[in-house]
Amino acid sequence: MSEKSVAGTGGITENGMGPLRPLSVRMSDGTRAQLEILAQLNDRSLTEETRYALEHWVDKSKPDPAVLKRAEQVRADIEREAATRRSAIEAVLGGNAKGAKPSTRSTKQASSDS
Image (cartoon, rainbow, N blue to C red; front, side, top):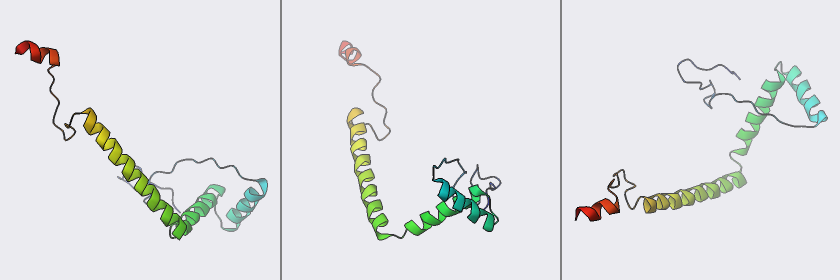
């Protein structure tokens, strides 16, 4: 488990998951003591042991059918919201959402030119 950034990747770490960011976690004294012992037994720092445990939990959770089902529901919700927002943008821009610039002439200018 390396924390080193790969040269020339803009902060991407060797695990490919992006730069490391701090996370503050509150836990009971008993859980912390056990984690400290495990870190010592595994020749890792408390931070490395915590990261290892969290990464293991994420890997274990990914194939869980309940997690996968919920992920599909969340994805569908995101897609619905994105479609709603796209429609709202198109309505605000009057159909010019495809990159066409709206007319810069105001209605008053257009009517005075007639």
